[in-house]
Amino acid sequence: MRILSPVEVMSRFGKALADPTRAAVLLQLQQGPAVPSELAARIGVSRQILSNHLACLRDCGLVVGVPIGRNVRYELSDPKLAHALEDLLGTILTVEAVCRCGTPECTAEDLADDATVQEVPA
Image (cartoon, rainbow, N blue to C red; front, side, top):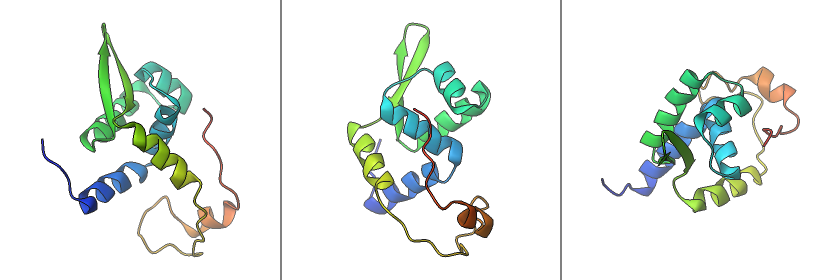
C-alpha cells in the first residue's frame, strides 16, 4: 500500500464520480453502510452491475467491504468522504451550454434539460 499524491487522489475521485451508478452508490453510502442487495435495489441495478462498480470504488480507495458473517457490508473508506460529498453537492456550478470534456453523459441536451439538480433517493 502507498500514499497517493493530491493529484492522484483527485483523479481517482473524479473517475469514481464520472459514472452515474458509482456516484449513486457513493451517495447511498454517504447515508450509511449497506449490503450489496440493498444497494442494488435502492439504485435500481442488477447485483452483477453493482458488483463491478463496487470493485471500481474499492480499487479507487473510496469504499471498503466489511465481512459480516457470510455477507459483506460496504461503507465509505473514510468518514471525511461523507462530508466531502456533502460539500460537493452544496456547491453551485455555472456550466457552459456545450461541454468540451468529452464525457458522453455530459451533452448539451442534458445541460439544457437540467435546470435543477435532482437528488438520488436515500
